[in-house]
Amino acid sequence: MLKGYPFYKYIVNYHPFGNGHINKTYLVETTIGKYILQQINTNVFKKTKYVMQNIDLVTKYIKMRGGKTLEIVKDNHGKKLKKVENCYWRCYKYIEGGETLEISTDDKIFYEIGKAIGDFSFLLTDFPIKKLKITIPNFHNTLKRYEKLFSLINNNAKVNNCFLEIRFVSEHKLLIKEYMNKLNSVPIRVTHNDTKLNNIMINSNTCQAICLIDLDTVMPGSLLFDYGDAIRVAINKAKEDEKDLRKVKINKKIFYSLSKGFLEKTYPILTDIEKELLFESAKIITLECGIRFLTDYLENDVYFKTDYPNHNLIRAKNQFKLVKEMEREENIYQNIIKSILKQLENKGV
Ligand SMILES: Nc1ncnc2c1ncn2[C@@H]1O[C@H](COP(=O)(O)OP(=O)(O)O)[C@@H](O)[C@H]1O
Ligand SMILES: [Mg+2]
Image: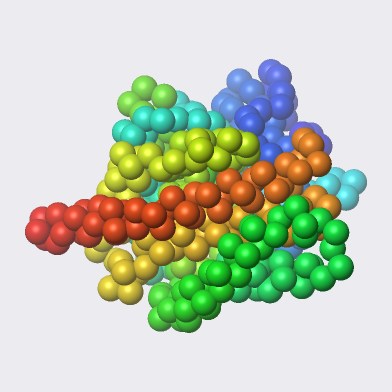
């Protein structure tokens, strides 16, 4: 497999690398530099060619605009995607001096994370969106996710274990419907779709963000989901599968820092409707994530990896508790966003 790459004869060693859960990642060390080699998970990314096409277009565009991003390394035949015995591989230059974090409670880091996510949207503002392929249809169609869940509840014995959760979701049907309608007025932009902490490279010395990596889910979409999903993951004081739901609380400092970083970068491009929907998008995506966990629980864990029988149910409960926390103090979070926007307006950004 490695033989096909121009750095082959310079290889010193290679080994599995990072904590990614989707692809198989290797670090290849050579005398002419380091490389990241990845076997793409074709169960998740069925349209592998289109995935690579999207990444190629987007990384070229970011580079053209002077931003930092992943750099694809082609094989000896000039190919960006290599098929070997039914497995697909691709290679990137290793980003020197950076690291990805698995967890952090440092709000300064989340300010950087917010900036990196915002910068991604900003740099790609005028990208010719029609060139991007939809590699995972209906990825953030919350209403479709809702309908899928409710299609599973008849004659399913497990429903007795999650009656309250199903009721909680059904109480939010109108909110989801209205949000989806509002989304029709939101610009379609290039979105990353997996804006969690360990997909953002941080400079190990300065702790400043370098760029977003893991571009497999880059697609046309709303930037609200990139912001919302980052918020969802960042603000939860508990782990995603914490059983003690009392621990599911919101870290307000992190909410503020991430939002500030994101808005500083995106303020010049945001439309009024996007500004208005920021907080709601975090709520909706948290709900959507809970719905996906609950769906997988009812489908006997076909999508998310589980360690014990009701692991997905625990995860779902955790997300719904986070939604409740968001709703309980909604005005606080809305005001945080408003105050950041006001500051930026006064600064004349
Ligand atoms: N170009 C790169 N330079 C340095 N490290 C990288 C690079 N690409 C990936 N990594 C490391 O490998 C990990 C897994 O890669 P990622 O593309 O996120 O795969 P997955 O889709 O499995 O999450 C990242 O979290 C990061 O630590
Ligand atoms: Mg990743």
